[in-house]
Length: 206
Image (tube, rainbow, N blue to C red):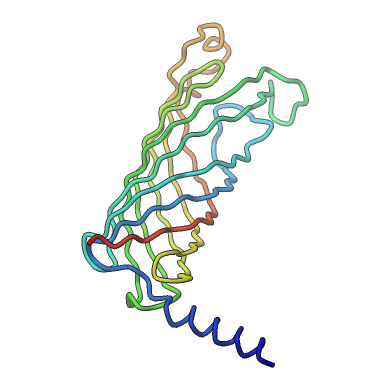
């Protein structure tokens, strides 16, 4: 019985101190584990288009509930190319190095003392990808919504749904590869739906 009472008191204490640091002059650090599924008009068919990578981020509350910050992506992956859509015959393959910078603005919708707080976010992303045959530059516009659950005044766990519209441009290095590709495939427009889960650490500035 004492154990049950102790557990209840602990839960009550956690709930009571779960007031988020969403006030002006607070720093927020974080990282997201991202699972991505893409659709659109591809430059070529990729055997495995599922990508998983870690995204560190930093932000600063310039006003209560309003954050300005940036995240960064560094991705290394392998890919497989096919000659034709649905074909099992490989055209080639190799590795990809991908780097981005992603400035963002975020606004929390509920009062700062809420344990669960909903949010809206808009961001712009510029990236550069170096692949086996080609280099690719990217410009991306993102709209995100979701919520953050605060365990205490410092640590929060966020669940985000993100829609991204991106334009990519091929900066070809391999001339033999260029002759195989049609000139109409020199650029790409994409739509992506992303689901993110990540921790945020809120550190108030003294």
